[in-house]
Image 1: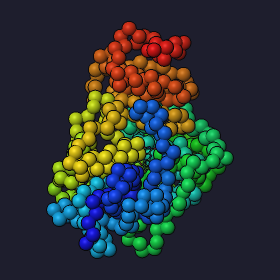
Image 2 (image 1 turned 180 degrees about the horizontal axis):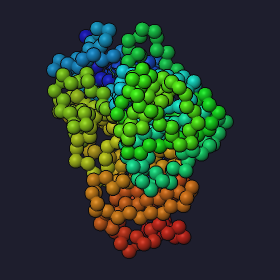
Image 3 (image 1 turned 135 degrees about the horizontal axis):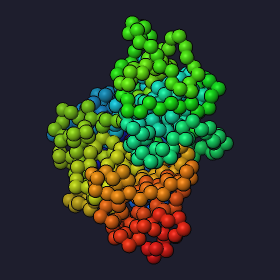
Image 4 (image 1 turned 90 degrees about the horizontal axis):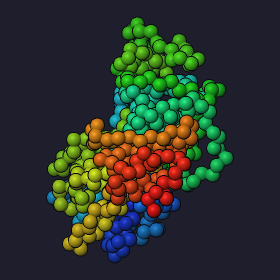
Length: 485
Ligand code: FAD
């Protein structure tokens, strides 16, 4: 059996970045990449926006493209069925085995689903699940979206021509990313018409994954979608309405009922205010903890993800409370020579004061790249210093057509009540929030084109004492850059 110096498991952003970096750092060594999906995710148009903020597109590419660009990488389209860390052998679904010296696990995460086996409940994770969603939406008059994170937020904004009932467990929308104030800022956009972007060019190539019939490997699910997953998708239902969204706050799902179960329950349905469609029988009914019962065409379960670790439960990896494989500051698990990166792992080193882990494409890329550096260094009997990207949390995204930038402890994470908030809001234009701890900036949330990100990033990193300036920090008539020059 041929022995590879390096083995990477997973064709998502973390795995592909890790294999690419290993290939560049160790051009004379063999790198094997196992992926259950035929299409792999490649990072394109990478731009460093500031010291910690980065932007890139994610391109789905055929596996062969990687072997052309990185000749010492062999991409194996197969499914890992077992990892024997004593013998350092990876076992594959087709009976094949791969021997390795060092391995990096990048198997991502899977959606945490309510009523997972109900055919009227969909999860959204990869290209295939989005295609299924689009197809079902095409004939839908009303859907119920459960969840309050990024996917749910993007979805309710994208869907048109179909009533959307959005059930959130919190007091405000989009809690994973924004505070109640910013949620309030976004609310008027929930039922606004979306600008027509169909004339804009598509930023990346897309290849459709032809999940061959009966192909056990592809059928198992691909990599998570990238940041622009909604960019070129038509999400349109059957009705003529534009946006029609109703939010039910502080609710969870009590039950998902078939028409027959609903009939037997004898419960009445609830008509959301402003919704016009009602029909005698819906394909599925959702009962919420508020007692409301909504009929709809289907339900989208967007209630977060869980690390994809089932395969490794028999290994002796130390797992975190939230189910990820724990890694140290060298991205190494407790089993020597086994590394992990991306959604599957839990960063278990002492975090820098303004960094925290969130399962995002930016961190998947950073962890994949850093894991490769750690593996290459280990091969030389060396260690590397924790990368600067783990010094401060930084993320750019887009909600309701607004640029959203999250820096440091943007929601006061881990600070209890021991923080101050500075706020500047211009309705419909921008929402700027600064979190101060001991008169120093601990985090910021910037919605709109504020142009403040670089200055705020420096203030967080440098921990400048802001007591003399804080009353003027967000004064729109003061050029903040001049302040700190
Ligand atoms: P994945 O991309 O999940 O890749 C895992 C890989 O492992 C896949 O190729 C899979 O086929 C392979 N694999 C799994 N098991 C096996 C096995 N047994 N054998 C072989 N291969 C296996 N993040 C953002 O930052 N911004 C966003 O706007 C955003 N939007 C999102 C929207 C959606 C709908 C979803 C689902 C996620 C979104 N995310 C977003 C999160 C982001 O996509 C993920 O954090 C990131 O892609 C994780 O990358 P990964 O490489 O760790 O895992």
